[in-house]
Image 1 (cartoon, rainbow, N blue to C red):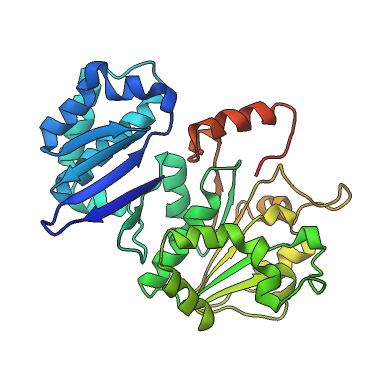
Image 2 (image 1 turned 180 degrees about the horizontal axis):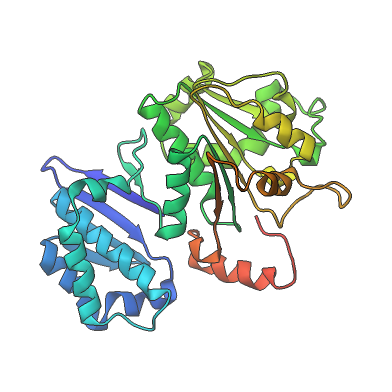
Length: 327
């Protein structure tokens, strides 16, 4: 979940929280917005709702606590028809009892001061915990579950905290058969179309000038998978995106690039390989081989973790019934 965050000169915090299921706004807000009024009264924050977004503003700690309640209510709505007053009060009490450190721990701090990233639900939180807790994390899941976005957020956060010195973005170029020579421009220009989703994520986390400066200084590097041979990457956060399109040999080559004091994140959808039917996916193979290896995190996100427009979840479900590919 992306939660937009702003501070004004009075040291007030403003948060904009997307509603994960717009069709159930009524249950979330309560009859005549009674749930929102309870939150406003408990934390003395301003609360408004429009266009499937809840807007909070007020003293920073109070806003963070109110945001925690709204997130917990959204999680509860996945498995129940409504939200009784006593449940809302229970979440309010939990938030009041949480330490400030616990509330802050869910937030991924990135470079852009006007943005903050908070994982949505247990699946995404477990994914982020795995990235920070393991040197190698695999994540599989359908389109829209935040696999790429959260991987980039974690990498940017690690760099911001000086835990790594570089960020390396890697993706197979299956459509070009890993032969990019016919495309115009230098290597970066050739591979940019394949790395566009990673750049889109980074644009939410740092200014354009900072992103350009990092790329010019090789702090952020974009590499097609085929060009990773022979390298050892130390002090780096390395992301392989769309990994289901890597062959077994390519995956082995990539995984053995991991150097000292580095983090490696491998994302993909094991059901959506663009390889030929005769070519097994290195992503699926690696997840099977490394499932019980200590220090390797395995995360499986599902349709309930989808964070794009609420209709995306319904689209994925509809197309998934006949095996169609969704990205």
